[in-house]
Image 1 (spheres, one colour):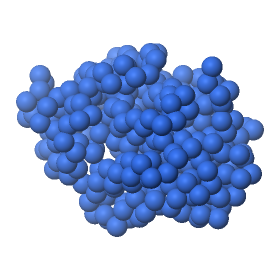
Image 2 (cartoon, rainbow, N blue to C red):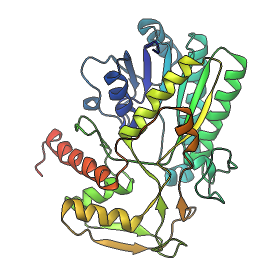
Image 3 (cartoon, one colour):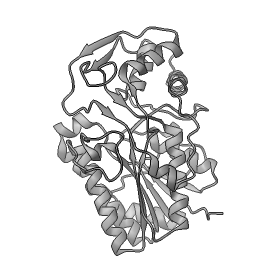
Image 4 (cartoon, helix red, strand yellow):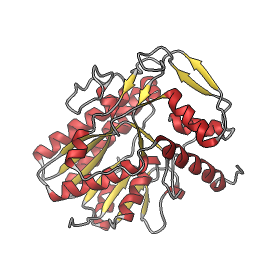
Length: 336
């Protein structure tokens, strides 16, 4: 049995971070959260979880949390995630995602934290030549977002080689859905995730969904992506943490996806089926840098961890996203 250590979750009031907090808590790990609430929500953090309102760049605060809570591991989700914004404002991304991560890693080393799990991204691959994409595929990010994450992976590898800390970098593909019990979900206004956008449109919050690119070399011409349920992703983090604790001299880098893809039109069709409504689709040109297909080779994570996805079904993912969208209206005092 793996020893459960107190875990600090950065960005724990955000979309993926809040699901990781639930997964850790459900599995019996003591959890604390640090979040500066620029995009996070207090309602996303469960009762009884210590919450520190602050920035991961604040070394004194992070040192105090590590000491007060006896932190033995960090799960790092805090950062900026909008690819087009990273192109328009690269320095914001190199500050939030790279410089702040460096400060956090330094605080972890200084505070004696032995395990570090990092929220990375398939954007580190850029536009890969092969699909499904294995972890050893060349890393050629085409935007500052992907590069900022890759730089943090490099910092972690170098730090683990020099200090008694190990890490796991999990490269996410397209995260979607919400907690099956509707305890948390994607809550950010103006989110760009396709399934979030589509369920908003189905509930009348948007008048259409834009389809960017209809001439890709895919079965229906629209982009194909590997959609992973956020709760399955959170479970992978808990299992990765167990692996780090069990083998403190070993670090890991793994893709997080299901190893199969759905096109934009297939996703919209699934939302139509689940909601019994027809979403207005607006066909537009390709966005710069969007690969036609981006699917994970997930053989490494399946071989390394006892990870058994529970929600690897597109309509299930859509159904949970829809249930959360309705719950969000209740939280905000709306009526749908």
